Image (tube, rainbow, N blue to C red; front, side):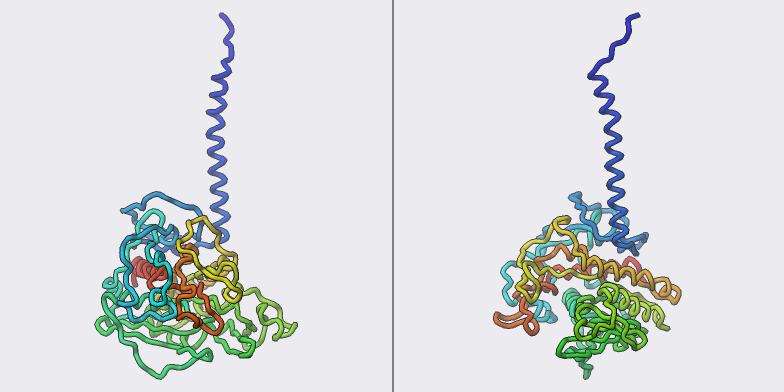
Length: 431
């Protein structure tokens, strides 16, 4: 019998056959490592789902993209991860049909050059996000009350919701003699839907905790990080839903207090506070303030509703900051993966998530519930949705020398997504 000779081509094929699965396994390992790294950076929390059939952890913002069409029969999906896709349908409302739009966000009135920002819709990975149903929302809120607590972005959200509901009903603003904050803003405003017995309230509390302006010239604040702002916290038991937000004011010069005693400061307060106070990173102050606010809700006797924490919404100043010539002139959304979430926004979001995780168990024990309204990834992709220079008449300003606004959101615009998600959040986990 003649010896068998080796065939070079067949040997190559065997090598390729062995190498291919090894390369696939290596690729899968790298993907898993990436997912684990990202998961550690952004802690998980309760998922926003499309139906009430299940609930699980909410993944954190990611930059992976997907072009696959949404599944039409998904029992549940993470509504916070997706991409913006073109939308030919008309906006829910305009500045002619909604009387609640503040001039500062009335981009149509003041001639924003491109209105393309209204022609995009958020499409989650793997499913469709239902369009906002005003009648359904009002019916779900019948006989209930909801409070928005935070800064001017909380007002931006509330005005968006009022406009979305205006197709079905318009509320009467409850006229009182409001308390005026040191900044000149009304501390509380109330809107009542008589036919539904539904009240929406707005509380101005940009730090969520007790705050006193200690130096008006320097714009410096004393923040009592262990004491919730009683201007809203005293009314916790009056509401079925409380939506908390607010991070932007924490960058202002601040001295941090606990037990009434100054214990730290942020970088902006260095000159005025002296050198005897340790500098505390702002995200840690954010975490402490949200933990105190959520803790006040969790501990309040008589509150059996839901506290919803809305995560940070990124600003989009480019080629400078708000006071150094920055602007937001893009006319299209970013594609997912086109830019990374800013480090500051990532830290703020992480601080908010940590605060929620640290207080949700106590809330459950007392019969309340805490949920995350995570809009950070979706809004990070929308540099085109801000007023820029078109939230005021030419030659005027937003506030003081603040001329260009790349922080707040045009109405109508991407901000309407927040209420689309809020509706799904409340429907998915009904009281």
